[in-house]
Length: 366
Length: 271
Image (cartoon, rainbow over all chains, first blue to last red; front, side):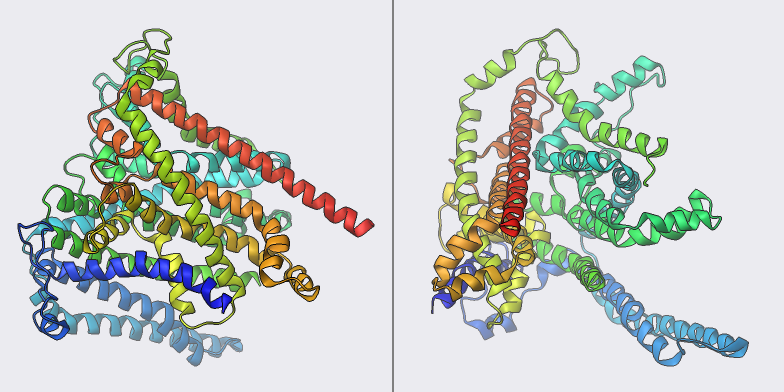
């Protein structure tokens, strides 16, 4: 009895304050805008079935949801084919330990054939889907679709730069003397606890036209005209790399820290150069940390609002910013809700991949 | 032996310079005499004095601290319960949904959480104010708390709890006198995490706050949109120093409790 009560309290809390609000977003995304307050016309007032038959997909059509759904289907298809179908078929057809030349050649050919069939299936399904989808991919307002694309682009590029900067830091930390490591670890975690807003704000003073960076470069004589960095996409990249760096460094450090150093020593004893030992041993062993770090940066960056609105310019469109403006400036709640639903749909693929990756990791650890 | 080469040293130097230089510049220029933030005109603490005179900031700071205190306390209670259920309650109906609801807010973009909660509060007719921000912050912070506490709960020896139950403790007594003291460091760091998350949050608070309940991040955000000001530099410096102090204290406490636990274990084994 008591146990049931213990479960009921947090369960009910999450149901009420997490799940139900989602239902409401979904419902409002299917409503019409009205000038009354709250600014939408509920469509459920005539009962559930009447509402279902009169569902209003206008908001979704307006934000170009068809194109997003099409892209989503294509990506999901590729992921399923390459991650699940292809390895299974290959395992079923190709023997694990080929004997002799002919066996090896046959195995290689079979694997190639399976891969080709796999690609053919993807192309075929997409070609079949395309005419149907084209009817939906009629984008009335290109702004929204451009926002999805540019969010994706910004997230991918900044994840890449975060990895580029974060990996050497994690590597240096893992190679540092043992008694330094707790301190170094705390130095990486500390900015994470410091206000996100303040850390983004710090860059405004640095990157602005009269900012510290321009003063410094002008003083050195490297440039003769101040650079325009603030209010461009470049500033957004800097801001994202800066604020999300700890998310990249920590998992990579965790992976490198567990690594057995004698493996690298063995490789070097066997004649590897330091660089090839890194590529052959360290890089593959740190891969789980790299993957986890990339997801931890990529997923929150997609929906980021603070960085593009403070550091970005008017041409920096990210989906989180669009949602915010749709809601607070245009007061179009149904469209804002539809944008939220689409953002969630886009996020499902990376989130599911991330969960899968984490699960594989946990199983490997056992 | 791990080698610490010049490459590692350079990577660490540049990496930490990148992480800390922007904040350091902010702190230094908060003591700048001039209103022109990028021109150094001598040392002065006048912006701190001016901040102290600014009623709007002080009010916002008070609202923020109130919200952070209540939401982190509620979130710690609910999050610890949730973690305990996930680790100890075994199978129950709807467990999958429950674990989904605990992990989902961690990856949910804040704009979506904020929007959905606002629409929910309007739908049930709750006036927006301190209460709605507390409810919103509790919801997403409890998930972080439960993750922190879960990692502690799975790593500790369950037989201690079973022993307490065998010796005649009620489940609640066993929790209070055995489990709680062991997971306490995690509970405290969960509370601290929830507190800072609430202190920092701009997006969810913007959606769920009313006209009379502006929090500090909302205030800072609207001021910052107009550019850099020395008052905001001073305010940021205070916040950075407070957080640094808090994190260092917390890590010292947890280090000491870890040492003490090891010592106790050693005594128990020896005696």
